[in-house]
Image (cartoon, rainbow, N blue to C red; front, side, top):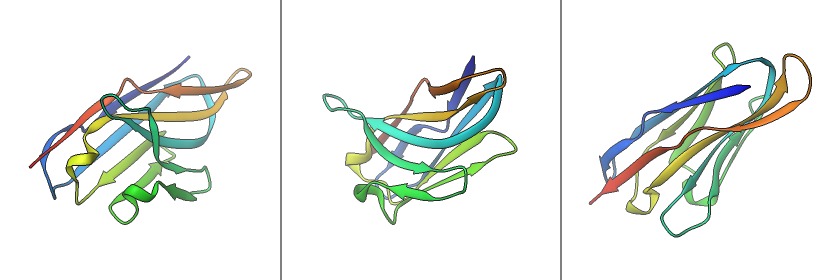
Length: 120
């Protein structure tokens, strides 16, 4: 099994910054893509950003220029630096990690979610 532990959410004023972290642990042979999603009340979960094993990044249009995704492969950890936060960024943020088990087979695991609330 693979476990993901998220941290870094909280309450911040509009224009402020937060940094989310998501650490993967367990029986992992390798990790491919690592991503952040978010889900606001009454809305579907949506992709925020994704980073490949080679470091290539892709962002949703609504966060381009404000958010930065990065990863530390030695720590099996993915980060999301969120700057210039807006009220509409309020959501529960989830990390997703895809890779291969140490024994056999692939996995796609989700974090427990961390609340980000942006206030005016």
